[in-house]
Amino acid sequence: MSRSLLRSVLELRTPVSRLSPTPLLPIRARLMHQTSQIIEPSPVAPESIINNTAVKQPPQQTSTSTTPPPSNPVHQQPSPLSPASLDPSIGTLLPLLAAQPAHYITIHIHGRPYLVTAGDQLRLPFKMPGVVPGDVLRLNRASTLGSRDFTLRGAPYVDERLFECRAVVLGTEAEPMRVMIKKKRRCRRKRHVFSKHKYTVLRISEVKVAKLGEMEV
Amino acid sequence: MSYFRITLHRSAIGLPERTRGVLAALGLRKRSQTVFHPVHPQFAGMIMKVKELVRVEEVDRPLSKKEVKAERTPEPGFYVERPAEGGRVGL
Image (cartoon, rainbow over the protein chains, first blue to last red):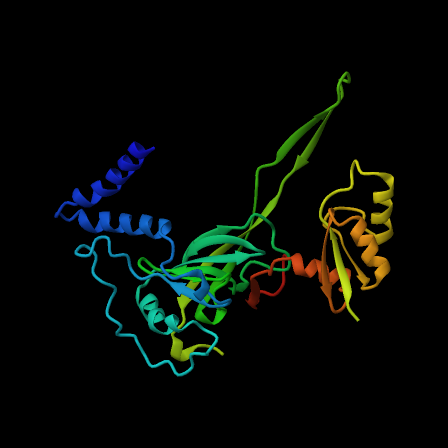
């Protein structure tokens, strides 16, 4: 037990010590960032997560020299409209998240999570009733919203005023026909049952983080 | 006036006929079915008979079947913001 622990600690340490000063660095850094962000729990205690508020993770400090710190809060604006229902950390950290482009978002459609970014094509596991190709859907339930260094986590959902996510209905896809053979014992007759399901395909057209000043109320 | 919100949590399979009779009298047929009964000694006694099988809460008003279902259903998470230009063809 103690040996395996020691080994795991050593394994954890090695990438740091093996960091090369060559241009490989940013790639390595990004990898480390992603893994550490997934593994590490939020530093903020769960008591501070009030419903409909969120917790920000500060950028990980594992490799300080490699990644440039998130761009300075140029976008930081006075936020007069920030409602009292939001966590105070959002006021300081949301501009940082908004300043880092390429956001990902975990949207929830009928309670199921889909982690997407802008431009993704998403095949839902069902045919959405009542929509036709070309419809623009506004997705308003998300549990996480993040960029490379920051993650905004909802409890359970991120406040829907903090982001805008839209999707365009591209159409429906069909799976190949399934054939299931039904056969009873001691009887030669076989019955074929066919089924072919249809799935709605969406394209995520927009993932935008709101600026606190111009939040829709 | 308050109500008991009674949910059958464990099945009555293999239990004595008398216990199943109590569940039938409460109107519980299958697991996770929810019924509402007014707070009254008669119903409290019935709940005591099957207390190992049900979960009970006290609520202010009975919910309809639709409302109970709506509690369980997750939100859709989307709405049609702008319909397609060509109209609702191919729907």
